[in-house]
Length: 428
Image (cartoon, rainbow, N blue to C red; front, top):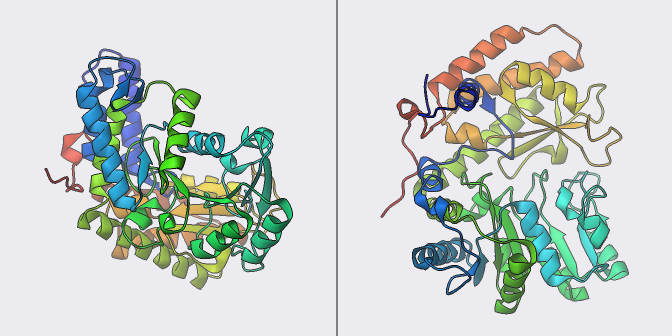
């Protein structure tokens, strides 16, 4: 199928093949989603041709009046959706947004307290291989015997190290975080509370997860995970003073020209996240995740934190002879795309991992539910059990079943109009 009217046949072939791959397989990667049709279209608008630097009303290039209106609209939507006083919508990525926050609030060598990578944190939260650890003095808290955040340890480490920032949130923590408790700890040592909500911002927007901006000084999120929007990030705060420091840190500190067409897509995403249709999608994603947890536990498999409060599930393989990498490779043979992950106090390398991270965001966007969802979940459980028990498994039959379900629930795409399903609507 020819999906792009372009003369570059090599690129056209790769785009076609990628569309076919996405249509015939199921992504259960927590860091992926299906971008909505309207935000995809906004990214291809002529705003892509506009170059600007600075902020609305204070630009370094002429011809930006409409771009100013667009950015202000996006800012207003971000503030309204998350109930905050300040928003910067220019950041190109979540990691960059986090660096911008550190640069705004810290001096080199200042102490930061964050969730450790193995307990669910993110590389940009001071991992040794990340540039943040070279610039700032990171200390990491972990989890208790039930893999839940150890709030007593946060208080102990805060008292000992007197951090300038206490950071919570991460990339593989499946339970709701007690922001109030961490805010009390931050206040006790005079630290900023910073929340990275990239993986649960959709639940926050839908009112299904505590809003960190009720407690935190600052928060960041990407828009392409649970929010089902474009690439890029936003930075949110409750203080105009912090906002001014963020603005200076982003431009001219870390970034030159913003992507105006991407800001258009962000604005659409933020509006869509305020709709009832979006709330229904979030509710389905959480319901599916709980159904997946029940299926896996019923088959004798263990889960990190023993369950989930979000759309993310972490299968625990610490007591098994198999690694997360082995399991993720076999699931891919079935057409189910996941990622291997480290688990708390993991003894395996990050390249192998003792966990598998799964998300139901894409399932919910594709409206795979009820019996079809259960078939998928049973296949996932079967793969784990066959690997653990070293029993044969019919990967061909499983992949055909997954492909058949996926074909009945196609990925909406602006490139192949015949695949369109009803979308999250944008009201003019």
